[in-house]
Length: 147
Image 1 (cartoon, rainbow, N blue to C red):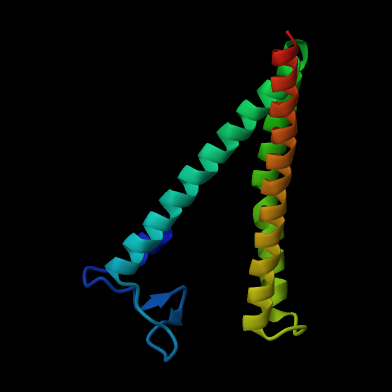
Image 2 (cartoon, helix red, strand yellow; image 1 turned 45 degrees about the vertical axis):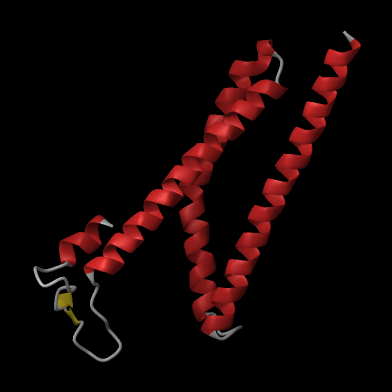
């Protein structure tokens, strides 16, 4: 949001032009302070949820790995999280550009399909994590009861 904040003038509207493109043409709208604060709140909530989910995954992995292999597992997990953070925006940018301008779908249909695809992938990942953690918790409970 830092570049958006730099473009906001004292009246609460986006600057008149960005890189030589006039924003006073029909179709361009000004960014209000309410919209800016709303977007900032959405980013803050997203960052908070992302941090909680990564921490939860790391804790779950530490519980599933034997102590002698824990350092290796943490290193591999950190590598994969860093790889996802570096490659993810490029893949997302490609998917958004393809869904909006490839001509396969109308832009609104392409954006909706992309959102549904990403939502289903996220839901599948979350459900698989819950299933695997449930099996691990059940195995741990059974081993505790047998002792």
